[in-house]
Image 1: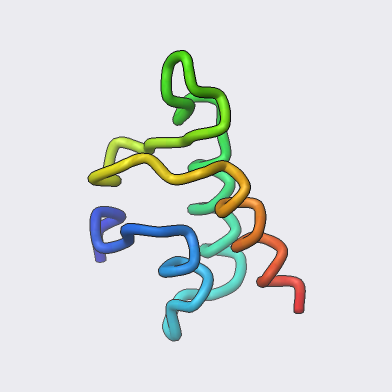
Image 2 (image 1 turned 45 degrees about the vertical axis):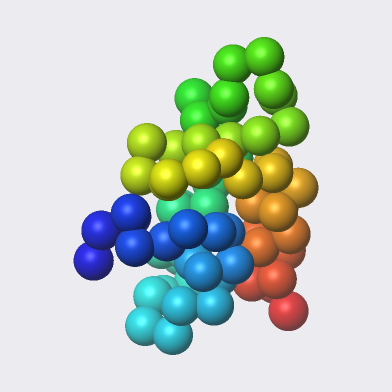
Amino acid sequence: MSLSHFEHPFDVARHPSLEPEVKRAILASWASDAAAVPGQPALRRPPALKRPVPLDDVFAALRSLDR
């Protein structure tokens, strides 16, 4: 499965066959400053994504894994 399969952080968090550790690793890479959109620090766009996502959505997806 390629990362381009996911369009939003909750697609990762809700994926039925990924282990929680894998979900956390993917989402952590999305939250990384390396994925920041230049001039828009509240957005992240990992190379596999078609469009940027809000950093708040990435953190919300990470928090959902703890429930």
